[in-house]
Length: 532
Image (tube, rainbow, N blue to C red; front, side):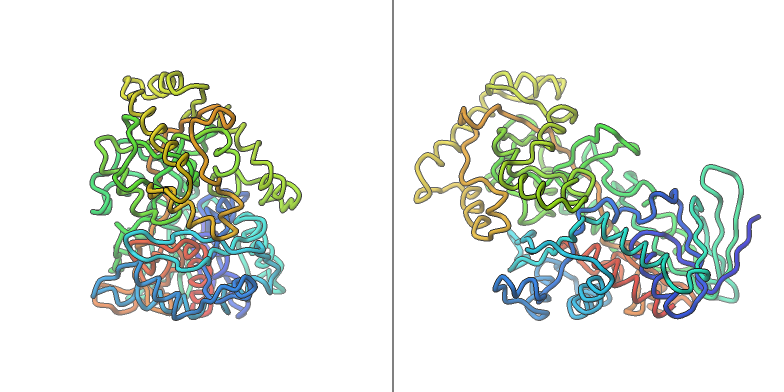
């Protein structure tokens, strides 16, 4: 048995755990930071993210004449979240985030060297429920990779670095309780039978959510989404399995809203998988047509990304077969398609301004080549007939109807041909609305017809639901203390980030305004470190 003794144990070296450790070291505490993964993966899922964080009322917004602030931001948050009457702590955490994020996240990050892209983006604008009324998604220059690199460096360069004990490949399986207080944890070294035990005054759980465990995702599927799909891809961390949720629950911790998940509708198989069912989450082109498994356009209201991700997942899952196709062409793909995260945004990750500008103007040819050459869910053809033949080979059962695909594209193109004054199609209306904001205008085509020969070849992308983030979890108060079923804090136990549903066991409600995930990890990590 390997034994450790320290002041505070932090379980999980992702963004929340690293941030908590920074605050603990700043207060002179001895810290044992445990992580199940290998050392080179320090940073967790945040390191793979695109790096967007939600703020309301920043100097960056003011630079573009965006009038925003806490009151307006909280109003949008409540509308999107749809909190219930018993959601006291999720509601309290939402209010705390909106009022504290600018100072405790935005200013703090800038103070340690994090830079943001020069323009906020406008996502989750809302559809049936109001969403972000103005652009609020602030992108870290260098993506989530740069964010975690800066945070890791900030942690490892502390003057009292000798008080930090970093241990990787340590899988925590249970908590130690002494006289009603959590005083440590037990586990084993990953891939071996060697066991360890650690003792401390306090324990901070920052181990992520449940969405890397696809069976658990299915067990907690949200009622809005009908039944979970037959094929579900994994876009979460491979160790986000809820093991620490169970360990805390064994000692009375309350877990809430595990059905509040942030999954995406446009996942494709990773062609170099690093885990079972490894998927990539596309940022679907607004100008592509979203078709069902037969090739029929989903409707009557067409699906368009950027307005309500929760609704997109529900629309797909309510189809007879819970996967979809997107129909587009080369011109649309070059200008609009993106893959979420730093891995497939190398120009942003490497902070190459010239490459970013070139991709904006000329199209992302590197990503186009990667997708069309290697992605198993992408087919390319010069005509609708040959495209559908390839779609059916991919589907394996001849289920795609060539007439349905051709009719969907022809009807859409005909409406575009009438001119903007006569655009009765809701997808075209939303494209027009999106292009009013320069951040979307730069990466959205101006009413691009699908079948235009000069814009070809035609492309079809088969897309699956992809599991991503847990928005429910261990219930915590505003000091990140884990609560039991009577609402009382469990002595010695704290939780931060995704393990706490990003705060309070579900501060986003049933929908997220995007960027509140990284932001919730940062705020929760700082609070947990200060209090613990």
